[in-house]
Image (cartoon, rainbow, N blue to C red; front, side, top):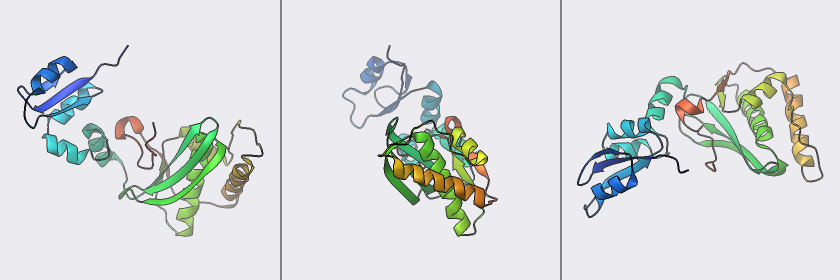
Length: 209
């Protein structure tokens, strides 16, 4: 069964929030310069309809719904870095990166690695971020959207069930180095959980979902 969508028409024969494409289509068909968009939830549609079409587009260049942007603005410490990983398959080609939260600028990226997992990537990204900040004598917080990776970092152990093979030998060597770094170094940087449901995808996300 197809998921229900909501349609906002800012400019058309009739404006408002509609619950079917057929009704929306009637409101925009033949209307020069019609402004409309579909949404996955009524809340997103209602938030979008509160502002103009162009204001909505300006606020959503990165695809984050307005209500999430508002929560993000109130609750996130933007003077921070955030990390994420992407994996094509499980296991599969994996890569990870870190981004400065305020600007979205990529500050490090590694991979792709063969026969990795997303959890390993999230773990390595966090440790890489901590080492990156330590080298710069920075106490900035670091965000991750992975509870598993945060737990592994705090326990100083990558508790993966993935088996080492000839293809991912280099990756496992990197994991070992990360574990050694955690045991041999201390850090004061807060490790914070990125609240995806409330704030949208983490800025370091690779956008492949």
